[in-house]
Length: 476
Image 1 (cartoon, rainbow, N blue to C red):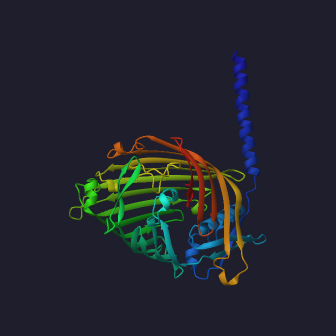
Image 2 (image 1 turned 45 degrees about the vertical axis):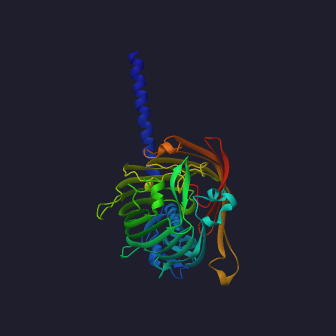
Image 3 (image 1 turned 30 degrees about the horizontal axis):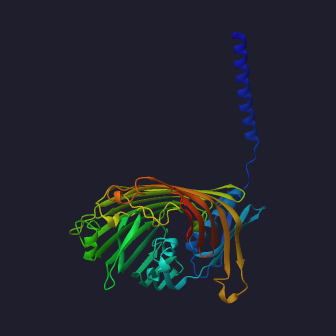
């Protein structure tokens, strides 16, 4: 028995040594792939955009030594980075290898967008298209209309200036400015803006997970203003930091406080406060408006009320985090998952700050509902089949080159969402708070140029209520 054990042990030991030795020999016999030196980088098509703005998105430089596999990966990634700047309707990053000298030339070809957009504003005020369409006569009083001007890529430096004058349901007058880089290293930028709003109708409470409105046809019910100044920091390509200081104020008609004495606090009709906001984002998605590969992590820390102003009633702090992951499952099949949530450990019970799901964030299938609360978690999962691959077309019209290059693609597939909202202040009035919400269905997404997405979904929620819903953004 001992002899058998000894022989077995020796046989095992010799087998391990043989396999390890074979691996070492095979590794020593592997010829490493040849590397090529980047000899030149040529940029074409940028009539306005500065070379430095384009090179900020390129993840290689002249004299870098790369294998052909690395070249392919970096060219594709750089091409995606350029599209994510929203400066171009189309771009290519290609290379040519001189095998004899082992040098490579890079060609970056871009097709710039139209950078000046005077626009007529016609917007639905409601939380989503279905919430507006479901109203009697699709109430035209709940539309916003006006004129806006957006000037992108000022001086070719990717600066943005926005002006807006809007009437309708929510009157708005405002201006915003963003410059991504103010230093030579192109790491530090600035943002600034001011907006003024007023309404003659607002919702003043949520009951049975629906908004309850108050209207004053002879005057304004709520008037708000917001001024901000911020600094951004982008060390490498994919990570961004921002710190912004806001000065916000809001005043309401005293009738609103009689209808809901917790709209602000202690029947206040006016609040003014500073808000400090820090945000971090790490984004490797291939195409931000409708990603198929890559991931993004976002973190926000917000402090409303810092005790600087007299009677600065709000004293809220919350943290928000989200993670989205997109990957290819197989030929034309893609998977998209996201998880996000908000935690508010410090909160002065005001209805004004108690918004959670039902607005920009929601469980699909609950488009008609509002679920208020302080803390929430939301998970979404999509499978998408690529019915039509992204295709780029050019029309032979020289006079309108900015608009004659366009692309589109089509996707469809199932999805499922789950969410939970914690409301310790007003939850008794809204039965969908403090319980698990689940919804699912199937959707079809049309993606076209200038970052437009049209999404149609058939959903059903946990109450067994079906619906067909229309959205104008990506599902995650």
